[in-house]
Length: 379
Ligand SMILES: Cc1cc2nc3c(=O)[nH]c(=O)nc-3n(C[C@H](O)[C@H](O)[C@H](O)COP(=O)(O)OP(=O)(O)OC[C@H]3O[C@@H](n4cnc5c(N)ncnc54)[C@H](O)[C@@H]3O)c2cc1C
Image (cartoon, protein in one colour):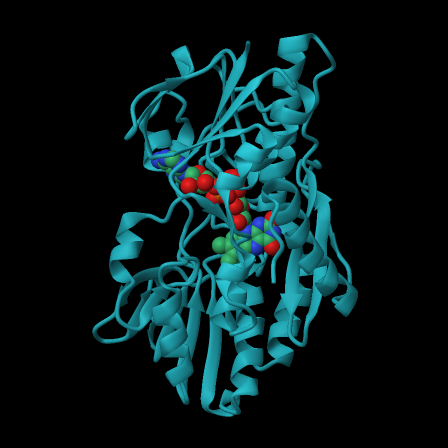
């Protein structure tokens, strides 16, 4: 019997596992992940603003066994792609094929600066403290700084700002709180182009949310509650919810698979790496496309189909760089940013007007993945 070891149980890992299961009924499929559960990233922001507790959008990876997929809950400590083998805290594991879907991490030096009233907006662990600080915020300055690029989900900082704006209005304190988003980039979403970026910038302005572009954070001083920017500007804050830079997981950066920046650079269409029978998908690989679940999922299906083709001699597949992301706006509206991120000379991305139907589609997107992958229903 042939076998595949899937490293990671997030968007990429779960999509690859189910696609392989469907294509190769006799093939052994194992998912290895350090976390034993899955949720959509945006569910953390919903929890933060009181829309829905994160637990209600979280599913256990233990459900995988009902689909004939083995789940090993452990941390991977080394990857040996030449032998399709990994070292883990539970001992070595090996298979005929590897799919690497280990996501991206926050740089430790950024984590070290995020304490007191400065939090990692993307961290589920930080949610209780963030919620407490947010509930106490009656006046002052709430800043959402993007700490570096690339970062996960390009629309997420702006989406968070819109939801925070709604939340503060709901509490009747919005007039007393200055809300700012800062980014080192020249516009809100350069990858999506200037038209989309201007639309988002105008929507921020309409809600009285300040946007500061080309502002690189140099340091955060959590004791003085001040952000120092590279141009020497200082910004005092009351509460800071930072969007961390994404870096390759250490176990990837330390492996023979690591290329420029520590990321894996597989063939962008087939997702094959330089090592035989080793594929890489999702946030742990070099962009484009942007670091988003929908792309991790698309790449993972392609990798799984190409493994199936290697096993049974069938037709392989190619990832074409297309996909869409949701951007949530105030008052339960959302828009999709849809396009081809491999288009030349630049990505071809369009955004529709935000509406309530797309907000409903975003909920359906979450529900579909939880149900199809892990038999769970968000409540
Ligand atoms: C606030 C927020 C909002 C977002 N909104 C959206 C959105 O609307 N649409 C969208 O498409 N994307 C969105 N994203 C981005 C999306 O969550 C990620 O891009 C996506 O999860 C990447 O999938 P992945 O499979 O590459 O990695 P992940 O889903 O991060 O999975 C990585 C897996 O690897 C495992 N792992 C890591 N290191 C180890 C190790 N050493 N040993 C064992 N296991 C390990 C982890 O446990 C995890 O199971 C959002 C993200 C955030 C933070």
